[in-house]
Image (cartoon, rainbow, N blue to C red; front, top):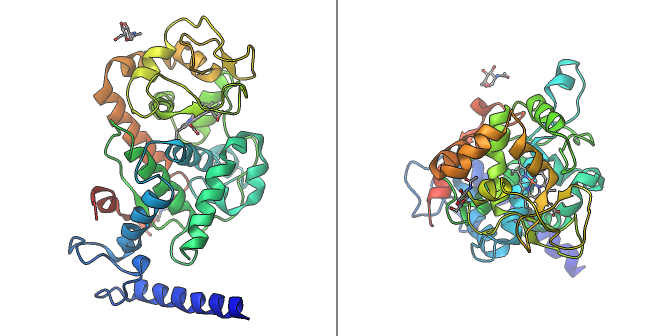
Length: 329
Ligand code: HEM
Ligand SMILES: *[C@@H]1O[C@H](CO)[C@@H](O)[C@H](O)[C@H]1NC(C)=O
Ligand SMILES: *[C@@H]1O[C@H](CO)[C@@H](O)[C@H](O)[C@H]1NC(C)=O
């Protein structure tokens, strides 16, 4: 009885938040997600308002007060596994295999059953609870939450580029099909073709892989969970590109795991996929340039990453809420 009343009361509050959010006038409620903070810039767009409070809540609840840790990395990876659930080839055939950056990975539990998404269970659970705990389901879309969490998480890593965030993605139309996410055992041909089918050139694929500069692996060799992919997993730097170019000479844990090759450095995992792309004629030139040009790497990553968070979306129907990321309210 008490529980029912509590839930009923919550529903009323949520309804109020929603109506304030659409009223588009001066903030009338101090419920965080309903209105822009008083100190926000006067040009704040109404659609961006909830994100000020969400940023603060995510920082404290999910990102340990703003650290480039496990959840920041996982949220970043989640944007990839959400967005690449899209195929131009299938779309042209009139077949729906996924809406891209649409939050389907949070919405449809069946995607959690795909082998490629195995390591993402903790972050999916974390973000789903976040949404429920703060009664955000009727205020923001899951696609926006995936894009925002990944972008915000990366912003806590030193050396992260300035990124852009758009809000307003509609709800996903359906789950993404299985088999669309490149895996660490894939050939260069397969990875380049898969990214091309989602709208990305080989150069953009290399730029996106700068994210492996803030990455660790837990699903390949269970004897060394959380082993980083470069020496500085909390810094968005060029070391990942540099290190993957050198010769592998040891197994960091136990030998011969699926998708893994020998690493040059003790304690670090080298993905077979990174190894082959660092050496393929189509991707090696950019790989080597990024190893030696941090500014170029950051710039190209920021562009390709924004594009990834917009796969399947019509950007003219979204609202640029980058202002939220630049605020420290
Ligand atoms: C050819 C494409 C890619 C392949 C084959 C690939 C593969 C992998 C694998 C196997 C892991 C380790 C997962 C584990 O064992 O826990 C990983 C981690 C990661 N990947 Fe990728 N990846 C690719 C592209 C991307 C892209 C485009 C992004 C951009 C967002 C990305 C972001 C990450 C991040 C941030 C991690 C670290 C996750 C963590 O520490 O929890 N990856 N990737
Ligand atoms: C990687 O960085 C080291 C140390 O700065 C440098 O000596 C080496 O030449 C670099 N390798 C590549 C392939 O850029
Ligand atoms: C994108 O949205 C704009 C504005 O609503 C619309 O005019 C345009 O036709 C849309 N483009 C596509 C490809 O759907």
